Length: 213
Image (cartoon, rainbow, N blue to C red; front, side, top):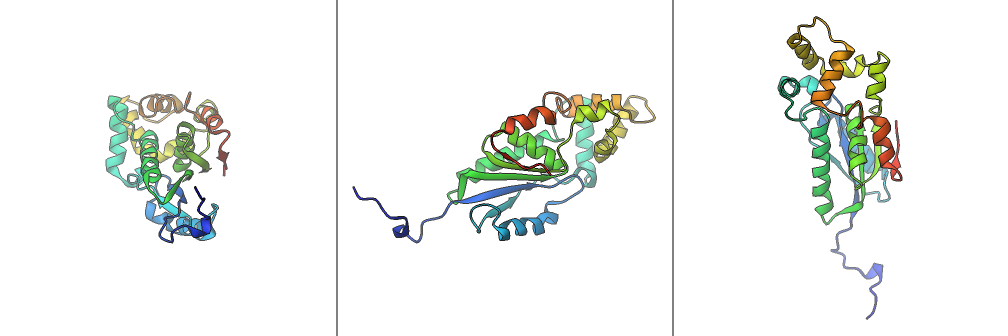
């Protein structure tokens, strides 16, 4: 049996290319990432200069969507659903299912990049899904427990402030405090300030490539 030289392969053969998934942050829209996506594709940041770049079409940003804010508050009140962080992680994993099923995507070269909240979702996804070959969380790496313990939780909490204010009203509180935020996390994103916090999740990505910005 003779081997077929690579140069003799049929011209119609589809080349498998790297894929990059980009997750936007709170208050942003996927359409606003077009310049970044084009830069990644044009620069050939992966081995192939014809890198395929795909933006994950997640739900509308929390601060821009009253419906999403109400879903998060409803989760706090009922304990059902995971619209904050975890649903997007699930969505990203299902998107990877789709990508690696394509005959033009190299399943060994799927990258994930996220900005702000998307950065947190990036390292959470990479930690639980070994199919992510390289993860680039931008800004999103943070210690949720550390922030609560050191009175530095306000900036992150501001991204879902309307839901927190609703939770405070339910509790008869005039203001949001660290104790309320802990209770909020426990129901909306259980474990985000514990077993699923950055220190535990980042270690699970090794030995795959991780660039923290």
